[in-house]
Image (cartoon, rainbow, N blue to C red):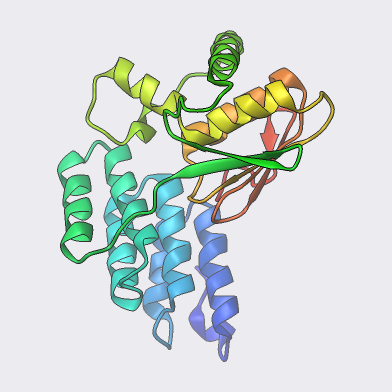
Amino acid sequence: MIAVSALSPVSQHVQTCVVDLLGRAGMVERAYEFIQQMPIPPTISIWGALLGACRVYGKPELGKIAAESLFELDPKDSGNHVVLSNMFAAAGMWEEATLVRKEMNDVGIKKGVGCSWISVKNAVHIFQAKDTSHERNSDIQVMLAKLRREMKEAGYVPDTNFALYDLEEEEKISEVWYHSEKIALAYGLITIPPGVPIRITKNLRICGDCHSAIKFISGIVCREIIVRDNNRYHCFRDGQCSCRDYW
């Protein structure tokens, strides 16, 4: 365990880095112990690093502690509420997930509508989940179906934890398959010439299933795919991502 005294005096940046490093290593409980021993009150970035680690390693109870601290420090940030709700949903804790969403509504916090966009020939094309409004929707659906077949053959299994609704399994699979970044990627594949990187931007954090799916797709189509979500850049190439599955 890293002793706080060994780092004192220490900047908030270094403290955040220590929490992030412990979290990345899967030592989430140790990261929390470190926070408890800090000589100064933890900042938003420190609790955010712990919350991110809890999301990646499936620690909803500890994630709740981090999230509630963030609620106090930054009560209007909807992202922290959404991460906690999604964490509960991924763990099958539907009542807890619903309660977090209800609390958001009660205090007037609105979650932004998730969307992804891609620029093709100087025109920006915006997609939402389950979007069928694009003029080339039929081509997009054909591409999605083709990708789905090829990904299944390559061993891809949809992660229905990210459906975030208490649905039947088949409904969950359909739910995650039509997320906005997958639709935007399908459009990019039918409009951007081979060999040219595909660049997608999403206004929210990319979900775990889309992240896994795009890794598979990058290997299948032999393309570089860059997704900028609201947390970081993800550069997918040859079935791998630059973030090394931690974001």
